[in-house]
Structure formats: structure tokens, C-alpha cells
Length: 321
Image 1: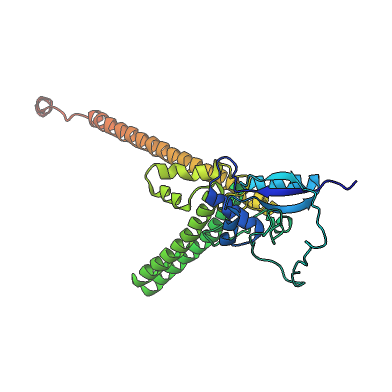
Image 2: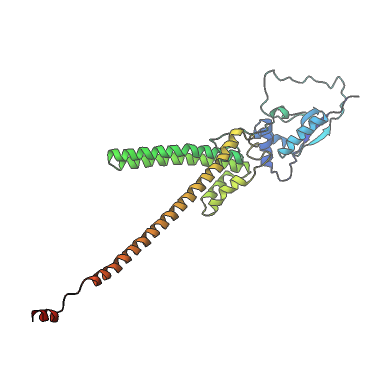
């Protein structure tokens, strides 16, 4: 007796909380096909996405589809009896040609041309300088740290060149040119930083336009912490599959933020302590000077009192007599 085979059947059903647009995008990503071709599967007709599978294979395919928001199901492959008059030669696809689209099957049990198992993308492709794609929390911190480390020396060199030009030419033209160049560099880095924020929002399943919340007073100061703390979607969402796993370099770069925060805290504490120490020294010096001036003022009357009084006139007259 031959082993029972199974089909993965789909009739347009979706998992709870998944909208049709998201499901189509996810399925198009899995099949590496256009959304227009995927839309043919959402007609309500029963279509076999994968046929002739063992029970374990069917279960694996079903889990992958369910993670993408597709409510497919497993059905046992029916026993078909054909006579020789009903058999027709099926056209074969030329060797070496990889199908890139899904055509609606003629039979409800015929599989699509793209193989689900071969086209399944577990992770998305990283695109640092793009508004598309997704990045997780650690990669967001790591990329932002790289951007910060690249910006600091450029700002330092620009400031040094502007100062040198100002001193050499004795004109404000160097300061103006240096300021314009610094503004261009800062705007370029800000543009890349916005791209990082948009990709982080995509990982949460949110629209990239929510980055504009950063411009709202008070709320904008809290919103970056949400991007750092909030976990992303574990599976695929409307912006694609999840980002790749974090590498060792990503973890090290993200941990540098802890070092930078500690250094900033120590520098702030040292500045406050230095200001308090300077204030204490100045107050001590002023009190010492005031006490010195008080002592000098008290000594002057005493010196005047110690001077001998001149002889009286009556005594001189007695001496003459």
C-alpha cells in the first residue's frame, strides 16, 4: 500500500489580524513573484499551493505560510483513476529556466509554478541607505553608532579648517564657508539617520511617516526610546521578512552606546564637581580678603592712638620762668 500524500490548499483565507494587502505582499515575497500574479490566488477558488507532500513536509510548508498570514490547510491527496483516453502529455518547461511568476492552475490541485520551499526567504536583505527594509533594535543602535563615530571626526576637522582659515585670512569668509560645509555634512548625516529610523519603524510594522513625531515638542524626546525598547515583529509583515540575525560586530557596536553614556555621565559629573569646587574656592578667597581688609581697618585707629601727645602750653611757660 502506497504512502498517503498531502496537498497544501488555499482558498483566500487569512490569519486573524492580517489584512489582504499584507497577505498578498508576504505571499509575493515567498514566491518571489509580482503582486499582480499573486492576486489570481485570491479569487476564492481552492488552489493547491503545493502537492504530493509527506505529512512532515506538508506541516513545514503550512507553518511557513501561516507565519506569513496565509490561512492554508492540509488535505489528503485524492486517489485519481484515469484511463488511457484521458491522459494527455503535459508541456514540459525548458531546462534551465526558472519560473518567476505564478499562473493560476487549470486544476484546483495543480501546484503553482514557483516552489514555496525554494522561494521561501527567511530574512530580508539589509539596505542601509534606503527607506525600504527592516532593522531590529541592536542593528538600529549599531548603525546609529557608526553614523555618530563617522560624524564626530568630520565635524572636528571642519571646525579646525574653518578656524585655521579664519586666522590666516583674517576674514569672516572662511567662517561662512566652513559653516556652510558643516551644514551640508550635518544634513547628509541627518538624512541617513532618518532612513535608519524609517527601517526601524518598518520592523515594528509601523509607517515610516511616524518619524515626524520626533518634531513634536516633548513627545519627540520620548519617541526615540520607543524605537530602542519596542521589539519588532517576529515574522514577516507588510514591509517584508524579518531582518537577519545580529552579528558579533552589531552587538559590539550597540554596546558602545553604554560606554558612551558612561563617559558622558562621568564628564557631566566632573564638570559639575569642577564648577562647585571653583565656586567654593572663590567664596573662600572672597571671605579671606574681606577678613584681611577688616583687620587692616581695625589696625589703623590703634596706630593713631599710639602716637605721643604734644606737650601742653602751660608746661612750656613754667620752664621759661
